[in-house]
Image (tube, rainbow, N blue to C red):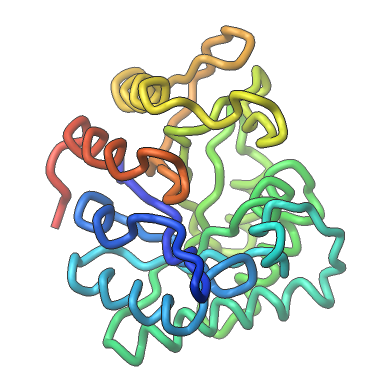
Length: 245
């Protein structure tokens, strides 16, 4: 199992996280594309750090929502959403090429991510965006109790999937993430470490109702803007063992 983090989410004078400190401990960096956070200078600096630490680069596109940090759901028709995603992916891909770094995958952010996991039409639109880009990149999505629909649609369109679980977010009994509007949706550091250990050792989480949910993940996410993200990343890296080459 790999370790990933959402990074590059500073914007102008607002600095959001400990990106440079976290980078040595992760395998994959999901880098903001400017629609929910990030700007050209932040993007260039984050990609430079990705290169320095030999981390896999992922584009982290979102709804156009700087004010809400991309965490507000928006009903955007495919004719608008697909070009928005292409624009964001292209920015990261192009900026990375300037530094000799290759984009390796795509992971939607925030409300767009949650919407695509729970709304078939949104997932279809995201898949369409991936397949209509000049190059098909793997798509990172949430591993659920049953991902048959997502796997089938992705396979039909020859889109590789990367399944992820979350160390620092509480799960519902149906296997989705508890809304950030609900108190306790973001786990305290000790809870996140307990959940990470359970995911790594037993491939399961305990839901908000105490139900044990079995899930299989390729990658484990720590949000860069979560309190104590650096400390969590360091400890989870120890649980996972040394980074693979």
